[in-house]
Length: 157
Image 1 (cartoon, rainbow, N blue to C red):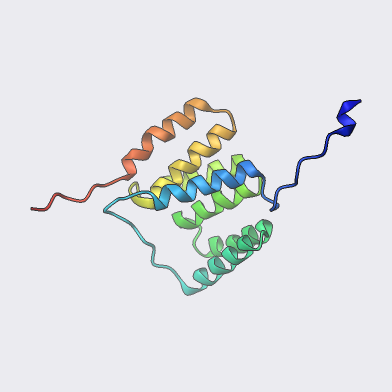
Image 2 (image 1 turned 180 degrees about the horizontal axis):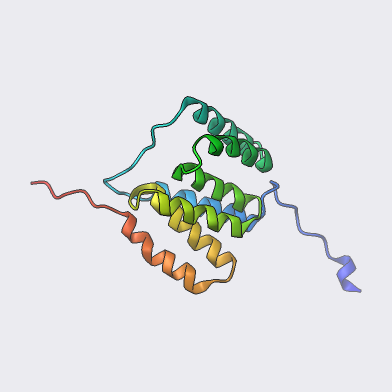
């Protein structure tokens, strides 16, 4: 009876589930907080850059399915681009497809550099996804691997 008197909780401000939004924020923060002296940046076709820019615009407008569709066009041109696969993993999390996100992040990690910000995003994605899927051992393993992405700068005298 008293349940009818309770006010419903406020809806989320975006179409992204709160746990997904916080997971993506943690993934992206892993890259910005990662101080590695080695970073690998892709050289790519300008058409791919256009599709990627458009996907980011869709995401900023909370239109994740359209962002995934647009990113899919870029992936058709460069299907093994680790940074695009990682971005796809992040969008898949926002879209609620945690298992597909894990597969995309793992493929990105397998194909990509094992150092730097992209490596950190890959492994943080695996931490977040495995935690969400209640795979505590898998999350712990990815968490332990995360430190291997850091390459300290050489000591200079």
